[in-house]
Image 1: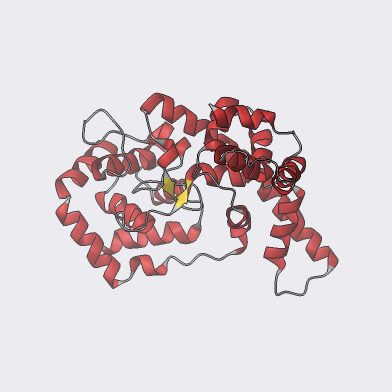
Image 2 (image 1 turned 90 degrees about the vertical axis):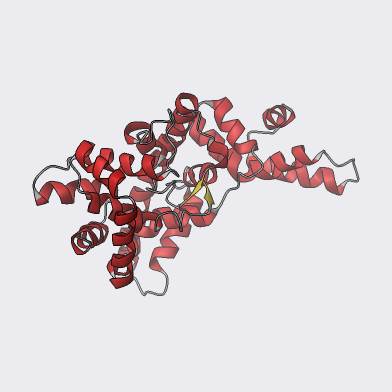
Length: 305
């Protein structure tokens, strides 16, 4: 493809590529075709991401296909929120207010046979399955608007010095910190950035695997800033391990309610849900590593019984 060939013709230096593109346009030479211009512009950040992810084992032809997809964009805000969210105290209380309890009870009544089948199969209460899908997406009303390949390719650059400093400023803004405290913030940001870079690379590899194994149209996937998609908000790696075909049609579609419910039940059971309260909290925490999230899901499940 023309786009694929063009990206190999661009210098390994992203800066040089952008300067070269500007020079061509400013000298009066004929404009390159739109596809070529698009590749030159994208090279400045996504090309850096290409270098990072392919050096860490992501298939190069797959990564190039992602980068040359018209919808793929680098977004520094995604780098910021995925790294600095440790400094934000989450509040999930609105998920178990009176209105939420009514909605979840109605959902359970409307889908009782399906939820009961999940409960029998996975030994996870239907109230918990229904509560997780409510907290995650309000049964599909809040699915997220971020192009998932763009999320992972953007976050793959989290460990670059430019974004380390951006995120240190984001965490330390509007506060008066000593130099020692700033150094502590920087250490936290660097550690989180390293984990998120690894995470992004893992999700890209899983994304390719689910495309090959399940025929998932990954290029059109949209979801949260945290890279999750579908009614239950699974990552590609979670889809690969724990998603299930709940309606027996031979495919796993996490935007389908039956598949979503069975997938949540299987996820929790596979990650330790058993008879004890401790196991319940641990399984839900594996779903989302936040004490506030765990409390919200289990509080809502108790209220709707």
